[in-house]
Figure 1 (cartoon, rainbow, N blue to C red):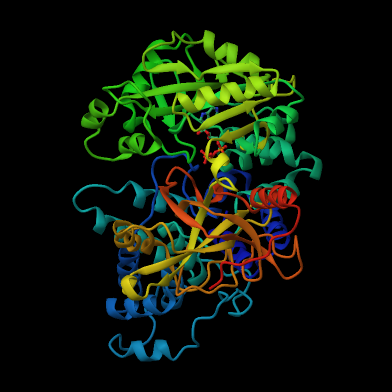
Figure 2 (figure 1 turned 120 degrees about the vertical axis):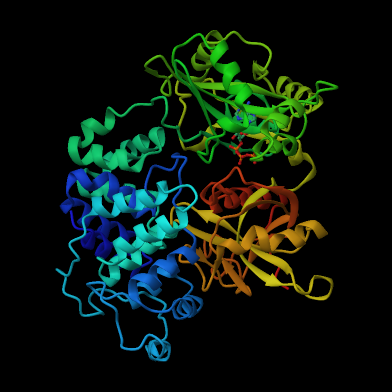
Length: 624
Ligand code: ATP
């Protein structure tokens, strides 16, 4: 399978922001793609070389790529670097400097800089094949598997002379690549593909290419229980929907976590469950999905990071106490005060995430895992079993005690019992409660946020709204005491339907001096030259960021806003939803991917409840 066909598809994807168009472009390509290459194609389309849970990430630095571009094109490094400063994208630089056969362009490399800048200024949209007058058939002859192989060798290059090794590997690909192929090879090497087709679009395209509309939920389920787009793509292409339906939960493939909806009071929550539900304490720690096999254990975060090195004691303990050969269980890992035995807030357990000194951290920060679900045991996928059955299996599957315990749970049958259980949870220093359906359909819905689980936190009693986990998409330079620093941030929520980040507030409160100092380190790795393709904003910040960093924010109220784009035109023409008096809580949600932040639908639901409670639409803005 020629890499040029894939590169051409990426190029076409970049020419539109419409999800339906992207789906059709991808589906047309997937239909004709060689089935044996589909696994690689699925990863490369996301700018990756493996499924998301794979520990290795290529992420070559821009500097190294520029060196390779300089060496393979013959242009001096300062020329290449200046072009990069202009365009902000190593891919664009490589495309402009490489010709189809890797032959050096231009005469004197000393004087070539001016002539390069005589070219038209970088355009918002990348040039398409047609724009460049390149025949559809133009190809370097590079194969998808050759590109994948080269990139994997770069990733694996380690040790003393690794930089040189990486540059040489990249050069050998670039020297053979056409300009457009070079653009995408460089972008994949940095891990920043920017074609804008996310997981949902790719799943839509697989459905369009190989199945029917009705099959779409089953395709998504296969992805949600394996977290492996390559596996799903190859399975559907080779075995059709029968093979997709046979995909099962298995140890080693993380399952996308099930999430909870929220309601503002215990009575509403009990009513939602028609008077009967299970309630569990909601612990304030790190969610862990443990994959236990015969002689090893892997612990995954909800972002699919491998947390085993941070909790080696938990991994060992789980293996020694598990009565099954294989199991997948979930729980919340909480730090415990070694002197008092009380649970400590979330921040303490995050010290276990530091890369260095894990032995000291294991000694100084003892933890306990409160287990709440079991999705697999000894060959059986348990996700379709109801909650109480899964819970019983979990309890019976372990010798409980010490570092592993069950979450405190009670089946409640009235508001009073619910209020009492909630009070007990708060006394035990928990965040609140998780109420869970005990109905026969109370399955484990991987990757889904729904009303089978509902959370209720003590914070809800003090604030008008729950906290929000928002993504930083831009920053404004500070003034006065904040001169020379970022003074405020442009924050966005996620629209999972559109795959876009839409703004909800300008955040300038809740930053202490240390955080103000730290902000550039935290954010500048994600700087973008222009508004990222996945962001929809009308408020224009001084600098843009690729949506990456998630921060917890509280606010007094959700309001209609003429300038913010979340749920634009949904509640009122010309208005979106904004947060009034937003404040950073001091909690960075590094355990969340940007797509796992608060969604615009959740904010819309909160807004509807708020306006229902106050009996009228509030309409103020945070726009100063
Ligand atoms: P929050 O910001 O409220 O922690 P979240 O956005 O991280 O929520 P939610 O689905 O909204 O995720 O809340 C569920 C989270 O609560 C789970 O991901 C898990 O980490 C944690 N948790 C604590 N105790 C429990 C429990 N008993 N059952 C399920 N999840 C629990």
